[in-house]
Amino acid sequence: MSRMIGTVSRGVRAPIIRGGDDLVDIVTNCVLEAAKDGGYEIKNRDIVAMTESIVARAQENYVSIDDIAADVRAKFGGETVGVIFPILSRNRFSVCLTGIARGAKKIVLMLSYPSDEVGNHLVSMDAIDEQGINPYSDVLDIKRYRECFGYEKHTFTGVDYVEYYENLVRENGADCEIIFANDARAILKYTDNVLCCDIHTRERTKRLLKAAGAKRVYGMDDIMSAPINGSGYNEKYGLLGSNKATENTVKLFPRDCQGLVEAIQNRLLEKTGKLVEVMVYGDGAFKDPIGKIWELADPVVSPAYTAGLEGTPNELKLKYLADNDFASLSGEELRAAIEDKIAHKTNKQVGQMGTTPRRLTDLIGSLCDLTSGSGDKGTPIIYIQGYFDNYTTE
Image 1 (cartoon, one colour):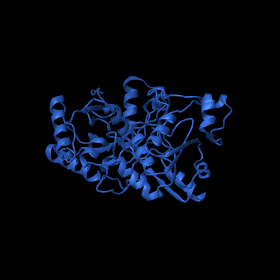
Image 2 (tube, rainbow, N blue to C red):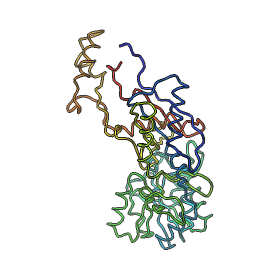
Image 3 (cartoon, rainbow, N blue to C red):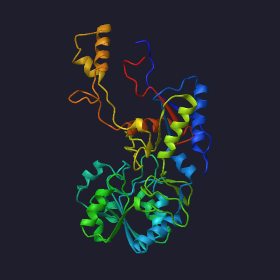
């Protein structure tokens, strides 16, 4: 075992991306310059990943509060709208809620509890238990919620999201009523016009509401799915995956990315002779043990990737082999036995003790998200080497 370094994930610095920038040129040049600066070679099956943010910015995929309001008004007629299961986020949802409020006469805001779907908690499960509340069936109005839980603030942001969202709605011209429930159908006692704001459970939520007799049911993926007066749009995800850009605009999740990742792959092949995999990544999937946040606020981890990133890992658990199949071996004999086992593994390890099956793009996207962060590192491009290597790779 002469090689001692396995997977390496590097943040690659890039210029600030503006609308209309050529990402094929920029990403390719940044990757080549980083390799020269870092003293490493570009190899087959290395991975180049770029954050969805720079792709959407290059596409100029933005919408304004008034664009959102116009779409909501067109779909719901400017009447009372039930806004259900939004995530608790100033970055992800506040500007969207402002636009939604401007497009309606009244908002009935239904929050899931104890937390939203990505793990932001309004209250703790312990507090719910102490109050004798059943979160699976009990619907709370604002009065009972305050009596039971007071004015809880988010662990990290210090924001009381209940108060924050109510104020946003009222400041933008709509009446506001807030309830707390985990059954989507609870909203139908208040209105039959419903905007489903959940991300990963949205299809089930829509189905339940339609079956229960809701008049108009849309999801965040249906708002801004087409341009309004020349605005940005995302035909597949609408407002899902959007981020606050300014006080009056949001940047949407990028669209039409497949051609971009393939073009970068082809350009790098021309420049280096190496076939490098390329992907666009958004939120990864990992849980903060203190704040309990799961990330995953984007509809998918990767909206586009080259063909070599399709599928799941095909790996054996070395620790299991060492403790079971080869428990009597050590040293060079153990190494040789494990290498032989890896060399003869099949494409699908049916019945073998392997890794938990997850999609490659979800795993790699999480690695990229952790590497780049979301602050001021200035590395919206990630270069990964050795991800597809194993114990036998030299």
